[in-house]
Length: 191
Image (tube, rainbow, N blue to C red):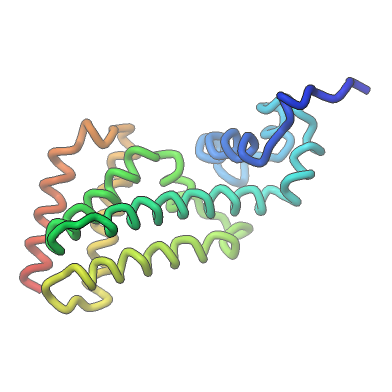
């Protein structure tokens, strides 16, 4: 049996999450095993089970962390002292910027789907969408219906997904993102 690694190299939940995020994005949920994650980290797969009881729990920890990061981004925008219309504009742009700046997070959060993990990941999107919907409703001059807010979210999500798939950064598409948000805001004014 090999001697235990030094404390400085001790395996942490964060190290596992960081390695697994990229692997889930690259291989998908079904095509990745705990053994493969452990090999990437150069640990035995048993070391991973000390931190996570199974692959689904590990995936859920990643999703939970990623949605927390999105929620923090939204909270930072909402805490700024801005006119409501400017704050709404920044919320919409902030969603796009988050998705394209944190591409691997975004893909894990919204684009990987598997029946085995569905029950673990439904809560994150619901909470973040509810926060998004409340922000849009409170910042809009018009009373927006549920369908309008959902359509707005889908328009943002479609934009992010398109440019994620094309491997483009937020900086590369900033002017198009600003145009897209202005276009959506004009539609909200006529709601």
